Each structure stands twice: as structure tokens, then as C-alpha cells.
Amino acid sequence: MQELRLLCLVVLVGLARACPEPCECGEKYGFHIADCAYRDLKAVPSGFPANVTTLSLSANQLSSLPGGAFREVPRLQSLWLAHNEIRSVAAGALASLSQLKSLDLSHNLISEFAWSDLHSLRALQLLKMDSNELTFIPRDAFRSLRALRSLQLNHNRLHTLAEGTFAPLTALSHLQINDNPFDCTCGIVWFKTWALTTAVSIPEQDNITCTSPHVLKGTRLNRLLPLPCSAPSVQLTYQPSQDGAELRPGFVLALHCDVDGQPAPQLHWHIQTPGGTVEIASPNVGADGRALPGVLAASSRPRFQAFANGSLLIPDFGKLEEGTYSCLATNELGSAESSVNVALATPGEGGADVLGRGFRGKAAEGKVCYTVDNEVQPSGPEDNVVIIYLSRARGPEAAATAEGLGSLCPQTGLEGPGWCSSPTLPPLMCPSILDSCPAFLSSLQLPLGCCHQSTGRG
Image (cartoon, rainbow, N blue to C red; front, side, top):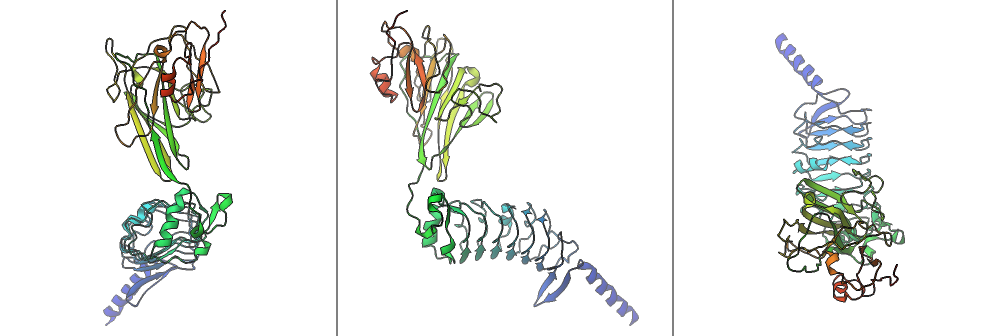
């Protein structure tokens, strides 16, 4: 009998040790509960029994959840963490809780959250993240939560929502998302449409309002008037080159990416050369061709000069600059891309673009280039300017041709440099581009009177 009493005492002592201080552990209605609420805890305790199914850590002083914080309790079905001071949830903090059904992270200070951990919580039915500092939700954040019924995101700092964010939530019946500072731009229009047509209950819609732009501040999202929105388009046009044309070393290569979309797309250049890949967020130079502050460049004038007007200039095109040049335009509604392949001709052979057309260019003797209308231009007696325009293209058919301006300027007997400028191109200098080039000017979409020559003689 004494031995039995001793055994019971050992078991009771073991159970007591299995529950970390100052928590209380017990069983109720078939659930193994660990209650650690209101204990002034500053970190998640260790030493929980592995069979705990409900854990309450609410109303403590937790400031973060590190990776593996709940690895000891893999059977957890309910986790309550409201009213703490949590600012960040690290990757792996929640990923081990594959049986979790209820997660309450409300009333914290969370601004950094490991959204990828949610991909492991396939059994989750309730997710409370309201009253935090969240500013962004990835498009695929909820992709695995097909059992989720209730989602609370109200009282955060969300400015926009990626289209399709709630599409995977096929069981969702309740969404609370009021009191967020939404930017009522093109990126939020889809949510307005979805909220008006979905069967999901969305309470407090009067408090789902616009914070910006200023003219729409306070406007209810469900009363937002239609906005002029369009996905980006990239326009590719090209001037056919002449037979037997060649693209030689030392040319100045100028490409122009003409983009359209609402809101105005951001332009990015992707350049694949024999030496590797170059990524340029346009612009990287100012109107004078010098690197902008904060742009890392080997010299004050970068090898690839991307201007704010969509033009890309390679002042000294050579073998190292051969390759594929792509411009990518992106806005809130999507992206568009167009590319062109450029290669130098070997002696006696013509270069070819992706259309199989030849490249052509000859040095215009005495040609000089100047800074006109605040745009930088190449300078030097042997320079040729090769132009490739990028425009609308929906697939790999995007292409372009190159033309040496030196061969397209008819001699007229007039002396002195003339100039052409366009709102979308760096001005191109040539000593004899005149109004007698109407076909060429028209093909470049330049006004026929844009070339001027001095009639004075030295």
C-alpha cells in the first residue's frame, strides 16, 4: 500500500513539473488546457505537456514569437495570444501547429508576420489579427486556409489588398476589415466589386473608407465611383533598316520604352549580356546623363543610362553590350514586358535583329552631339546613333530594328549642326537632318518641322 502511495505521489509531482510555472494545466471537457494568461510573462514558457490542446497566453508582456516557440505542443488546437506587446512573429513560430483550429493574435503591435507559416495551418477555422500594425498582406497569404470560416483584419494599417487575396477561402463566412487606411486607387477597385457581390458577411461597411487620395478621404468604399484604371502596355515600333546594313563597334545605342497604363507604370530594364545580367530601375541618370544620387555606378556616367522619359542609352556599344534588352512596366493592375536582341556584325556580315532584318550605320563625318532640351547626347566625330524603339507587344514577337542616322541624313550643302527633339526621345544631333527627310521623320513620329539647320557659313 505504501508503494502505491509513493507511485501516485511521483506521478503527481511529474504532472506538476510538466506544467511550467506560473501556468496552470488541467483537463476540461476532454481538452488538455494550459492557462498562462495574466501572468506578466515576457517570453513563451517551456516545459508544456505534449498533449496540450488549448494554450492561453493572453494579457501578458510577450514582445515577439521566435521560431519554434510552440514546438513542444504539436497537438494544439486553440492558441490565444491577444493583448500582448507582440511586434514580430518569426518564420517557424507557428508552422508546427498543423492541428490548430483557432488562432487569436488580436490587440498586439504586429508589423512583421511570417505569412508563410499560415500555409501549414490547413485546419484553421478562426483567425483574429485585428488591432495590430499590419500594412501588407501577400496575395498568397491565405492560399491553404480552405477551412477558415472567420477572418478579422480590422483596425490595422492596410493601405491596399492584392486582387484575389480572399479567393482561396472557400469556407469563409465572416470577414471584418473595417477601420483600415485604404488608398482608394486602382489597386482597391477589385475589392469594392468583390465586397458588393460576395456572400461573405462583412460587418461595419460604413467604416471601410478611403484615407487617400485627399479628395476621396472619408468616402465609403462601397460608394466609390468608377476610376480610370488600365493595366500596363508596352509599345514596340521599329524603323525597317536597309539591305546590307551593319551594326559596328563604337555605335551609340538608344532604345525607347513607351509605356501606357493607369496609374502610371514603373519602368524597369532587364539586360542580359555575355558578362551577366543587369537590372536597372529607371531612371538611374539625370537629364545630364550623370548618375543620380544613391545609384551605384563605376563612373559618373553609367555604362547603361536609363532616363526618366523611358529612353535607354548605351554610349559605347560593343561586344560586351550584345544581348537581350527588355523593358518591364508594372502598376497595381499588372505588368507588361517587351524585349529586343542586339548583336554586332562580324566583318563582311550584317547584324540581324529578331525579325531577321539588317542593322545599318555609318559614321557621319564631323557629326557632333550636344545637350539639347536637358537631355544628354553622345559626342564624338566617329559616333553613330542606333535607335531601337520598344512598343506594344504581347509575346515573343516583340522586336526592333536599328538605323544609323548618319546614313539617313541627305547632304544639302547647308552647314552647321541641326537638331531634332521629341518629348519621348533624347534629342538626336546630325549635321544634315532636314525637312527633306519627311518619310524618316514621320516613321519616328517626329513633327516634319523639327529639324532646323543654320544657313550661315563660316
